Image (cartoon, rainbow, N blue to C red; front, side, top):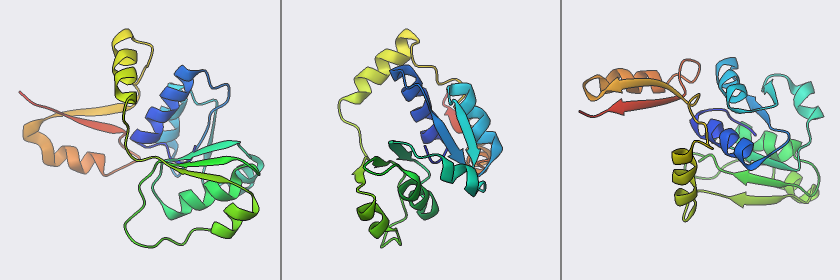
Length: 167
């Protein structure tokens, strides 16, 4: 898994609930990796540790950072014949991605942007307590403090998911 922001952290929780035996998470910062460990990641790596990254060759990589370097790392480090799930939303326009590497490694690239029927399963799992997402939420603000909440949410070192309270 590339990216341990709120979306990546939620993916860790879902993977743990689904019974994934090994969940390796890569991020630029230690704080999101701490949250990923709290949610069930079995191994975490800082993105700057290129040697450690090269040693990890997962069959499936979920790219949730929404960045070109993140997608490049996913394509470069996924095992030959593996799958890269592109969950993070890249900026609009053309992106410089190593497509030749994806072809040479015979990777399956799968886009994932919206959900359909999954929401019912997620709501049920949240209701019955089998999906623990407590570590994802790091801050909660009253709606009157929305500007402060936005500034907090913009800092990935300081925050995970930031919520607003209405009423």
